[in-house]
Image 1 (cartoon, rainbow, N blue to C red):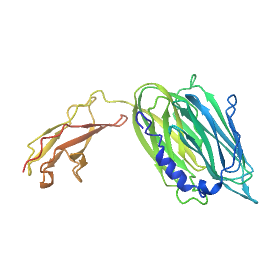
Image 2: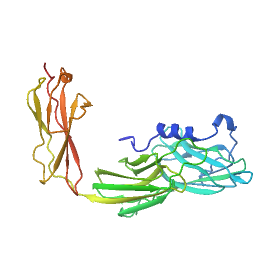
Image 3: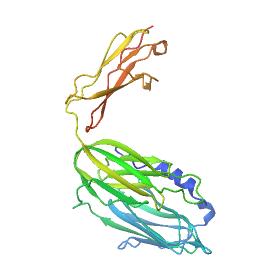
Image 4: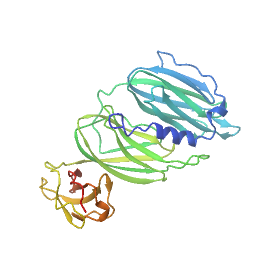
Length: 332
């Protein structure tokens, strides 16, 4: 969410996770579980089931621990979600096949709400405990140049200064859990003030992705695996980028008439040395193949308004995209 945390997908994650779990809730006959104590904020239960707790606004270190998760002599699939009444929280806490394990996630509560922990698949005798520890962000260390993690575990908090950054994410070992029909790896950078950024998302076992962005103000961030196999490893390399001091809005010259050629003028970017790429648009739609500084209008453009997006890039600098004003409607 931009204001509502775009990197924190709710409905998409829900559909993916629910689709992956082998047994539907309706078929489980959810078992009762011990409700949370207001003092300890601890939920406990055995086998498939659910339990809820009321949480105030704030940050929580949520730790799931389970044991005895077996069907006979073999480990059972353990699948669990954390959900909220106001639909601001949806966290995958486990989808793995082992007898015991522990996962911790940093979870932000924006408004007081009831949070429900749902064990959707587990061995009938699997014992589980979920603790909610209120945590602060004071004293968070500066963001290092490299952060790594395993599985669904969140990273610690880090303080990231206002500026521009390039982050390169590498992950491996994201093996699809046995019995699941689809799987992916998804990692995001979360901000306590909502300046979230998706870093990578894909269905491969391993991969590398690079993204660059501007951080508008110094704040506390953490790396948050949204979907990952228990043994998947991930690392993020953080590089500080410089920023252009002048990025003018491009202008279009030429006559908006079929057969005529429009030209994009990027203007003077500072510092000098920027390289420009172009993408022309017909209304809000990209024009296929129109990626040069000039564009010859065709009959498809008749009655449409044209604009161009110019992206300036320079080694060591944050790339910036600027879009021109639209032309008048193209005449025949």
